Amino acid sequence: MDSKYKLIIDSFGKDRFKFNEPLKNHTTSGFGGPARIFFIAFSAKELIKIISMCRQLGLPYFLFGSGSKIMISDLGFDGLIIKNRIKDIQTISVKGKVTKYGIGVQEAAIEAESGLSIKKWVEYLNAQNLEALEFMNLPGTIGGNLFLSKSLQNHAKSIKVLDLRSEIIEIAAENLNPRKHIIISAVFRIKAKK
Image (cartoon, rainbow, N blue to C red; front, side, top):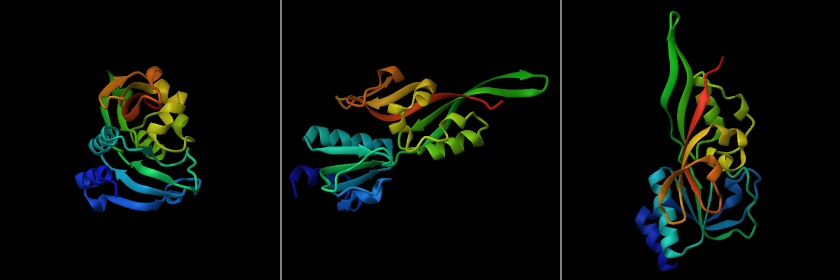
């Protein structure tokens, strides 16, 4: 094994990696040959660390979430595949008003990590009595959909990304570029259900 890959594996522990992992088991399409090395990132810290290490060492890597929007060759990938499973979600603020009938929430700011599935996103919004209808039919994760979905982009207040220098910065949705940014999390403004 390449000594550069060994540095990454030793840094996280060998038990965190799979070797020659069939990618068809990780895509919605059911296609995809073996990944030379396969890793699942469960925290933003892990995701940032492994991508930064790959960049510093000049190793090929490919990052994806649920695998609903990708097709991978049956030849596989001769590098490191990183599956994004960072999925924390939290309400960070609410906006409302007090009337003689009580306190009413009008809007909430929700922070969601990029590996959170849209299904879990919609469940969370519904549980908080927030508008979720426009997101219900989106497949995949927050991260993948932020590049493609105008609905999510329109609700995004700020997006935390890892840039090409492996620095974490906050940007607006209109500045998001899949060639320059890896999404870590985003803050969305979501209205309360009427």
